Image (tube, rainbow, N blue to C red; front, side, top):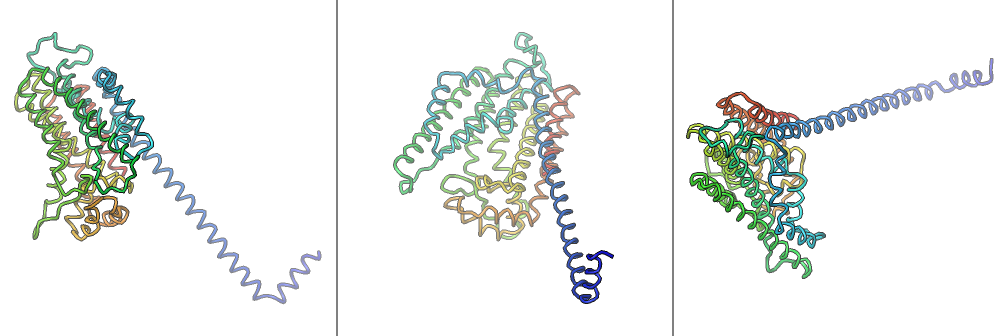
Length: 418
């Protein structure tokens, strides 16, 4: 018998309690280790699944747009190439360099336009071209047709106009309201003032150019429709309450039964803000193609429902991902639905009446997540996606209609993965 075995037997005989306790401690430690390992593997699996879902979501949207761009002839980012390469825009780009290092929002707007165009600008022009091709054109001079894309030259010009108006609107939103009692230093104040001048002039330049091209279409009805869309964009800035920088804050619900208050205010804000432009552009392009008023109205409905479905998804993503930029959109659909459900959340939201930066957005989103707002917004995305899809049945089956259907489906897939 070895010396080790002899020592072990002696220790067991004289320390049974200590041995039993040691065994218990070992079992507890082993259980903790196994549980920790399982939790780690589960968390790793969840993180991998979330990353895959996020990648697939982005791929679905980008794939839908890329395939749609092939149908209309070339990437829609080239639609605006002509005015992007003009001397005036080149000068603006040089002046923008002077703002580097400042906190002026125009820099972020410029970044979004260049690197994130598929999500906010160029998709508008693409939708206009797709609806043009899906519907076709009637009794139109063939000289006016762009044979390669299957749309009219006037319809392509209208897509450019839509993009320019959308871009000018986003740039104008980058203006900063500088108060006389602002704590900014002299150097920062100069940069902010200079940034405001650039934002105002560049936005005005794009808007005036769009007006010139709009007049060139020589169609009074289309001019009226697009002009009224520009008026709607301005009207959107007066919907809901606003802080000092004009960021929206939910209005106080009416006393008594406030059913429908949230949806009404949200739709009003977003139809005026962007939905009207896309809807009236889709209606206008069908007007240029010689379609009846009934078909034009279907185009209007399609543009409106598609824009609202996309906006509802964007609002949903901001809330679920706890994105700090939600402070600039406190009238997002999930928050509006929660205000209708429980107006007590306004106590926190009203801290932003001076500046939305005073609102504890994480606290607001935690409250909203615990309420019905997230699920109601998912239903909102589904509803507008469904209604947009129904409108497509008016048009004959073709590749452009299929592309529009794929874009709607991509929005549905995106919101399902949130």
